Image (cartoon, rainbow, N blue to C red):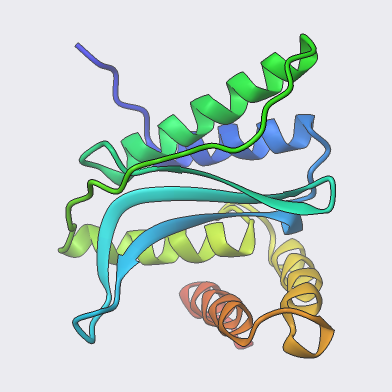
Length: 172
């Protein structure tokens, strides 16, 4: 029987792995798969981890499992194995994936929206407000359209930051 690992634990593990790689929290994000084609956002269980390494954005994605937690765990397991392989001199290029995903809805989606916001920001619900503001400032400077970023990513970052502050009862 497979052991289920909570999403929060996987997020901590991912942050720890990036910490071992000396990747700053402002240089990675966890992205959840969404379908916007119907005019509404439908959350899907796919997970993607983007991170800045050697001045290039890299992605690891998983869509093969029925839950977001399982897909995110697979991303973490791959990242951890890549880290271990690099310690042993293994080099790699390019990763592939498939998109076989299902939708999720319901009350759990509200909590996932908030956790998604933390992932987009590269922060944790346990982080103090000052750290969250600092990470937001750093990422917003990177993603700002005037600084070479895209408007879509900048807006997504702002929405995530506002959602986090609203959930904490603070104003942006």
